[in-house]
Amino acid sequence: MPRIDNKTLARLAQQHPVVVLFRHAERCDRSTNQCLSDKTGITVKGTQDARELGNAFSADIPDFDLYSSNTVRTIQSATWFSAGKKLTVDKRLLQCGNEIYSAIKDLQSKAPDKNIVIFTHNHCLTYIAKNKRDATFKPDYLDGLVMHVEKGKVYLDGEFVNH
Image (cartoon, rainbow, N blue to C red; front, top):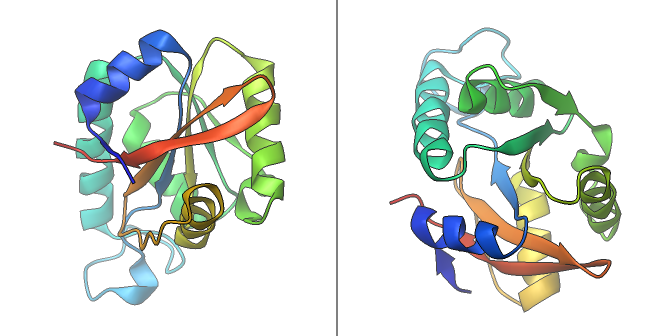
């Protein structure tokens, strides 16, 4: 699967709006690191990692709509990533079969010229990579996939690499 860094992503975003799906930050319930708050949320380290990723991402793609699934860990990850940008929580982003594509197309159709960032879960990213490119993708915390919607179809461009 192609690896897409910030600069390549910025070039893609000039050609057409991109949809970037990130796995949430480090889970509190699977770590010995200090929890931010709720045990179902992310760790303090996770907040720092999300903020760092958000700063790097926003430097090249400052304008995007932000979404997350309806879990504490994705909401916290998106909030720390965005530093104050409006977050829309959408429970459909927790469903990770073909219905994820309907949700992405629907979000993209609401603002067809906007880039979209979605915080979701590893099983969604794994499903998309396998379904769209027959690729094995085992995302770590805050790993991502780059996609776009064209003529009603969702395309997987590659794996986001934060360098």
